Amino acid sequence: MAIWTRTPNLEQMMEASRKTAVGHMGIEYLEVGDNYVKGRMPVDERTVQPFGILHGGASVVLAETLGSMAANCCLKDPGTVAVGLEINANHIRPVSKGWVYGTATALHIGSATQVWEIRIENEEGKTTCISRLTMAVTKRPG
Image (cartoon, rainbow, N blue to C red):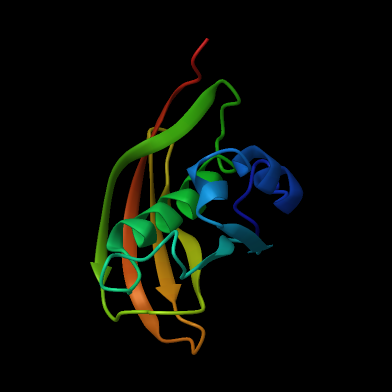
């Protein structure tokens, strides 16, 4: 059974992200399942640290991007919006080239908060980062 109250649309998500940090960093949305959103981010000059490996902050941007987009598609009240409240990340293994792939999966979808797990892997499918994102559900501004 799908968790979505508004089915995520890959084209709409890409368009909404085009002129943002998400677009600047080359993040792409790839797939939507019944209970997850998957995307990828290049490991290149936009996303590495001075040592030439993926910047931990870039991994966090990917994690929050996927979790936030997914969270806003699970809202029960159309007058609300889900915004990041807390995020943490455990960086497991370095990546120096190619792409990393993130999958956001809901752990809790409530009326006031949501909790998402985002698992990031390298091109070989090895875990590079595990993140947990807590979203606050609040009144839509305006």
